[in-house]
Every structure is written in C-alpha cells, then in structure tokens.
Length: 201
Image 1 (spheres, rainbow, N blue to C red):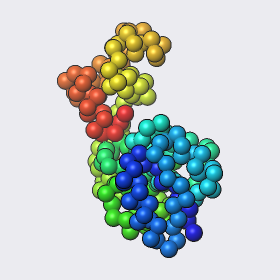
Image 2 (cartoon, helix red, strand yellow):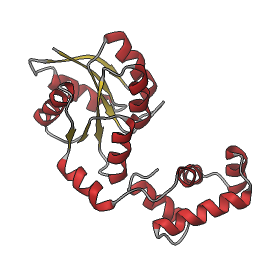
Image 3 (cartoon, rainbow, N blue to C red):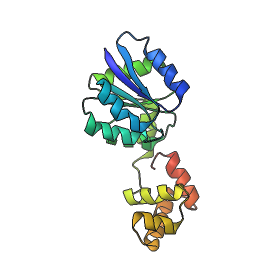
C-alpha cells in the first residue's frame, strides 16, 4: 500500500482527490492538510511514501515544502499539482526535489499512475507542461532580481524594499531596471506580471 499525504488549501478539491484516490486498491490517503507548513509534520507522523502538493498554499507554497521534505523526509517522494501551467514552476519544482509534476485537472487515473511512478523512484512530468517549460528557456532573473521583484509585487515601495533586503535604494532601482529589461516589459508592474505568468517568481 502506498501511503499518500495530500496538501491542498481548497477543501472541496482536496476531498474529491482523496475520495478518488481512495478507490485505487494500492493507494491510501493517510493525511489531508490545507496548509504548506503542516505537510512535514503530517509526513513524519504517518510515514507517508508520497506527498502530493498544491503549488500555491497558505503557510508555505508547494515549492518551499518540496525543499523542506528533501531534508526532513528524503524517503518521501514529492508530486506537485498545479492549476497554473507556468513553465518556470516546473523547473523550480524539479530543482526543489519534486519528481512528479501534473496539472490539477488531470484525470484521476493519470494522477494515480504518477504517484505509482514516483513511488517506484521514477519521474512523471505532464508532457504539455514539459514542452512549455522547454520552449520558454531558463529563468533570466538572478536570485536577487527575483527577491526585489517579489517584494515589489507585494506592493512595497523602493525604500521599504531597500530596508528589508539591506540594500541601498539605488541598488534596488538597478535590480528593478534589470528585471524590467530582462522580461522585456515596459514598467515594473508589467515585469511583475510577466515574471508571475512564467512562474519565475
């Protein structure tokens, strides 16, 4: 029996997925959580074999949780579900240690097959998401540019970003200008939008 922890902040979606997976003879959903910061505890408490994570959750997003599980529960395979086909998410998920990546609206038999494949030590990547990721190329933003742009996306002014990240205001403006140029955007808001759509932030 493959023991699964299911993490998704949408209660109805989580319940529906759990019910459908429960019909599979070799899968058992041993825990359901609605927040990313509850996943590691649930995996440890249940000895789960697989964690199925939504990319965007309160507490911690799926990408952060995948990195945590790589340290806290290296024997637990991670499969990421997303409702956003953003190419940058796939690259970041794989870098964080996820071995499966699937659209949330995939049929349950595909999800069950992906869980089995990851449990066996393999990888399962949605072919359309993989093709989009390959076509989009690498994330052009540096770690610092992503950090500054993410802070700007939260509505912080240049001065506040500078204080938070311990940079000068001029340096923050330089990072923003660089990010705007790399995304081919006309301004900061357009750069944020492009970076979010690509899954670079």
